[in-house]
Image (tube, rainbow, N blue to C red; front, top):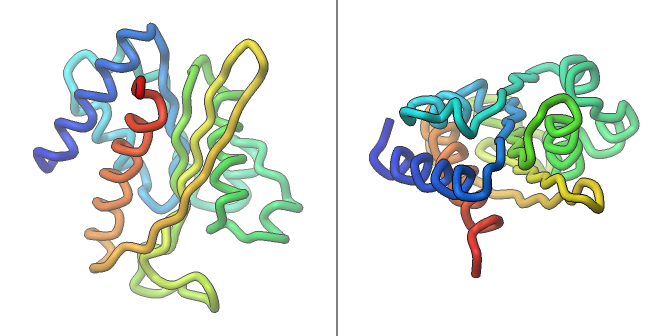
Length: 166
């Protein structure tokens, strides 16, 4: 694992430990690489609850409760799907915060408006008021491995930015 990913995963772990939170991941295009980056950190069992690799639309619907309407209207690679994946990961776990990734790592799979390298990220946080979700989309350059690695790094750093005190 790259040093920047290791540092980000360690920093995320400290934030979760300080808050006594648990994390869940819902992954499609990263195929478990985000969960692997997290579990590469010694002691991550204290703050990482579980990861879901939901590559197919059926898996997204069955395991994460992504709506068939969402998939039909926006597609699997969309901010709407990413937010539902993250919220579904919270519903199906004991986590307080969830990160989701869904994208087109390539080399094929591009469709109009959704190029190779496009990754949508979903974030969900549990609170007394319910679940709050957010999303973002980025397009990464490079081959399949580079897109997936960049997506993992961004997911870790974006989660840190969302929960770290300003």
